[in-house]
Length: 146
Image 1 (cartoon, rainbow, N blue to C red):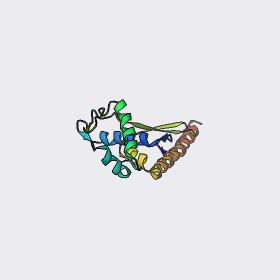
Image 2: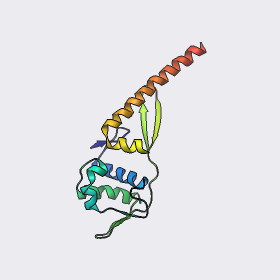
Image 3: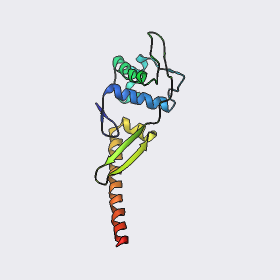
Image 4: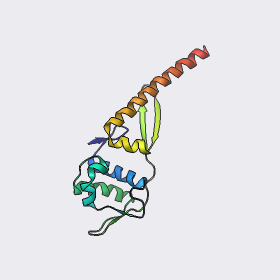
């Protein structure tokens, strides 16, 4: 299991699907082209997905994208066609202390955070700092109103 930006756990197949979405979205594998074969994706899983994965696990991740109609149903011996670019994905970070809701657009920051727990921790630290800033602004606002 890995952790997504919003703290939910992802199975290996879900992580692979999410990373493939990102790779397609950012034109590493553009819509209209063919996805690399399962053997290639499995052999390069650590660099592509941040985890090791068998051919079967990669296939399970692809199945998620087939259900979403991002890639075509594959046939033995034929390449997998990328049908469309997935919509932008958003990560939500919730801060219970100040009920602050920040949306981070799935640009390179999200792409990196999904792959490295250290960056997830850094983003959570930034949100904690935003909480303190918001508390400070509220105190200033109350002082000015008094």
